[in-house]
Length: 391
Image 1 (cartoon, rainbow, N blue to C red):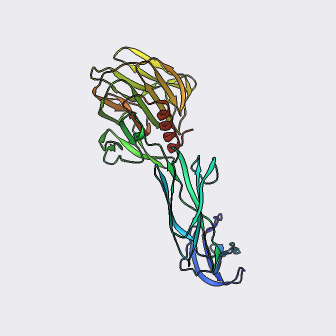
Image 2: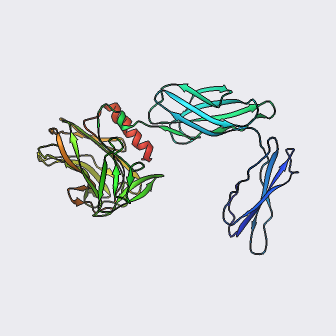
Image 3: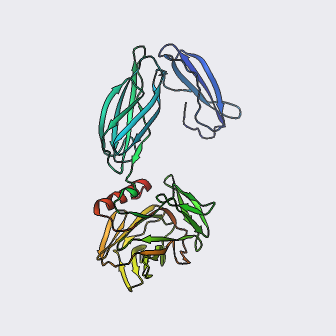
């Protein structure tokens, strides 16, 4: 049972009624009161019976008139509904009550994490007397799936229609043919209380230097480094030419000056690669790569700074070209650079011990040991954008 809060109410009093017919003629089945809660639950209902409730707001010396809910018949229905998607199949599951039920389900693909918006495509519609179903198909990366289900029984007819939780079939960075060098996810492996962030792919635990706290960005955990204090310094073994870096960040304020997103020598000869964010007039900015080993600077097109929202910053650096992206949109292609293989230090939110003077929030960091092809690049950016809700 649920209702809308009333201004200045000190509490609520409800009565749940049970009736043998679809009419407001029931007898009291359960009663209760709440202080501030606008929901209540009652169990042990009887199949086939009809239920409705009334609720009144209560004050110091009086109560409001009671409002009545719609009448609902309690009929056999599916519950404990689950959905999982693999690379080859969808597995649907549920529990149920009732005698000899038949279940009718529809599996739906959608482009957004919602039941009623986005572009929806019906994958399969079928029925079964079992409490599970498996459908073989090839799901699409970075899309969402859910299914609707109802059941019928001879005695009670058709139940209401229920929905499974939404399943996001994302493109994992590990699926790329280009190997991962680093994958830090705020919603997995982050423990700022112990000062560690564990790599999803290698299970390597990276120490957080200075101060950091766990914050929530669009419902997911992320790491906020404290100004001039928090950063990560570690090492990566590089195999040769080519680097791809994706960073989802949220800036708490407009930037004045510049800060390092990701930096470190990318080769045994200590050629330094700096992926940095530099402010420009009128709250605009550029992202740029500096190759300090050979003295060249590659700079992107100017874009408007975005604050208090997650933003995906990406760069692909090859031997002959460097391409920048903000939220999946290319900002232009410039010259490249060459590094040799080797193990080197990398820094997140700093250059060496020069820590950014911003309380930057890092949501996810994905680094590939090479350049991604266009398909993998698109899939990777779509995965990060869908997950973190970038614009």
